[in-house]
Length: 225
Image 1: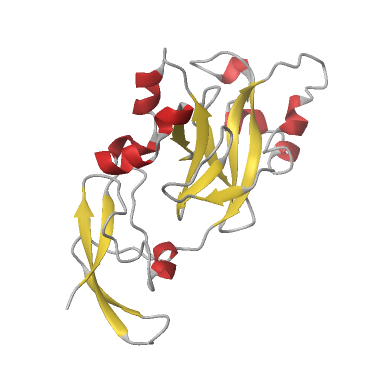
Image 2: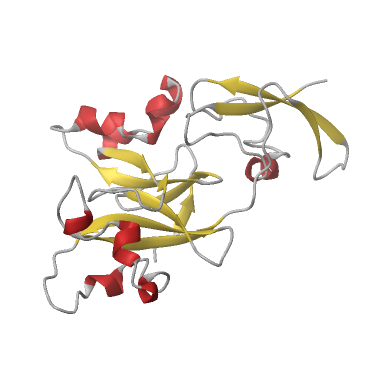
């Protein structure tokens, strides 16, 4: 299993690194070429970030882009190369970061099952293939056999949800004084100006949900009087 690195703007990363951008959001550093440069930008996590944030990534220097892991949905068909965050059954708050890989082993024992993230979870129930649509005869788009290769295991705390423009109070971790915070909606993914991103309140970043994976809506938290 790979180590997951806390992402920091300005740090240097290499191909294959797995980054934690914020609570629940993980990125795989991928290499690109001049031929598919534009395509890679559209699949990069930072495509929706303000230009100044995107430029700070300095991805041109290493021809890198940052692909996010999406949350796995049982019964959905995934293609080779898809990155998934798969909940670990019986272990709430834990996930396996995985990549969909083509099954290139042809034998009667199907050894790819032994390398799959699901081998210990649903294989004994004899419905693993139908639940995960990994066998060619059960797939509609990509008719190759696939398996789900585990890359890293992560743990997440349950985050508090707040509404747009909601005002709430948090306890300062050092002074123990109450600090009034307002959740401000933003149509781009950016931590710029967020009170929880750095400083004394940085520990709050993991406690409050600020991003919707479904809608890509984002919140920043501002101190108010």
